Length: 178
Image 1 (cartoon, rainbow, N blue to C red):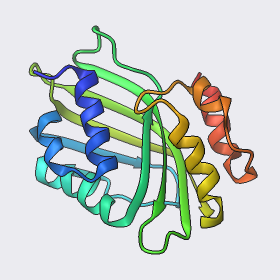
Image 2 (image 1 turned 60 degrees about the vertical axis):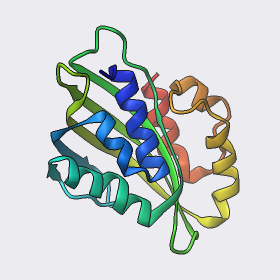
Image 3 (image 1 turned 135 degrees about the vertical axis):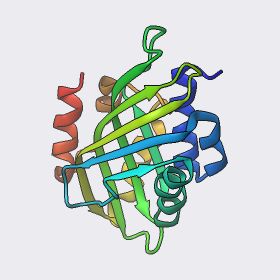
């Protein structure tokens, strides 16, 4: 039986590494997904039901569109978070088709677990998603790849935060998430 931390970590490894088979270790067959997207910089279906549909949206389709994916949870579940865990997240990725677009965003996860430690409901809120040119890829990826993965505190992410003006909203979000 996975712990909430193991389930969340497995999801991140599945999504970032395009490994849909890992989702079965972390998610219940009847999982429900809700996406709350508060930006026009990225789009997702608002809901999905069942493991196959969630795998398709969060791993397979995502892996077709993006590469160089780094997702960080900005806090870890404790032993008391057996039924529900909320945390802020940070993500960076580049467009696979051209490599000319880079996205950096942040938001919140709201995880719900069953008695067997598997995710039965996940609400992903995308608060900020910034689109940068591919010219920023090296600097942003150096920053992201230097952070502790997949658990990183907002203060750790801010220590070496890139100086691009286009990322000020992400920086402000990380500051308020501390």
